[in-house]
Image 1 (cartoon, rainbow, N blue to C red):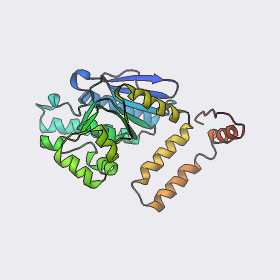
Image 2 (tube, one colour):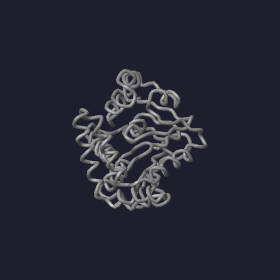
Image 3 (cartoon, rainbow, N blue to C red):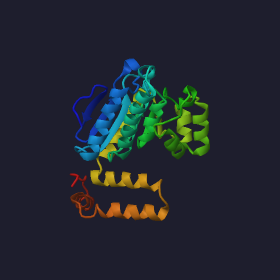
Image 4 (cartoon, helix red, strand yellow):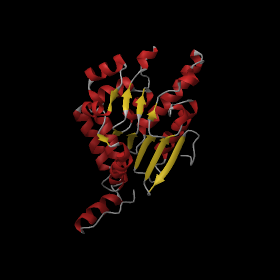
Length: 264
């Protein structure tokens, strides 16, 4: 992970928490080719080395737009080959995000359209400001979601609701997103980051190896049957038994003190 990116702002808070901000407010925090490269580098590097992080918050610059999705101005004069090459980069970035072992919370500060909604769907869970708006608008442009939207939206809201969202392309608000299961919590506009930080810090207080293993196991759970999912869970569980953090957690409980986890 680099210290600085052209299109992303990184701020490390405390020892174990990172805030990543889409930093193209002049372009609606839309994803251009450079942001695709930056995100691919970020997620790929964190897969290899978690750098002591236990939680990541993903948000957008400003107070109006989380992400407007793909940068259609950049795409306007692309050839078919250029479009597909750019999208291949976006595909690799999306997969790298999905495979990041660190929990990622989306803090949706404003509009999340197209790829913006697909991005928050790739996150582990979502807090949204009351002013947030959502839509998968690709079908109105003659294409369809290509950033896992047709895969993740049915998993989040159910197949019938996902078909309505995707096939109409109509926007919906934060309360609807909450009612449908897309958003975990709707926050007052000015309280969004405070609420997300509180939850992120709670996660950061827990044992990092346990966090990574539990996230991985839950991701597998929605892809396989119960028997094989449980077999994966036990394998993930058993990897934690010989860790120092497991010993520290039990010791701290018995000594009635807060555990000091080291990620070992």
